[in-house]
Image (cartoon, rainbow, N blue to C red):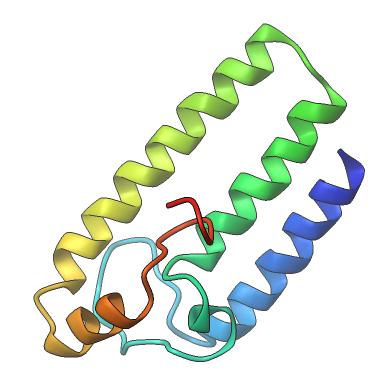
Length: 109
């Protein structure tokens, strides 16, 4: 569990570095990022949350924590999909989405 938490934190740092200044609270086209972790998945920051929080649940297993984790993942997926609906209006993002198949977890989703 701790390794996943640390790995999630490391992924979060790398994802933030990959984003550079393109971080915001609402969906906006701040330029398509294709370097760093974006070479493998379209939403590495959300991936980092999934990994780190999974580590927490493994370290502190309870029905409540599993429920909170499941709800959080569902909300991240809903937000990810809303962002993509917005970004898919841009031809450059459509090309990026066709090239980078995985949204959140390589080989899974």
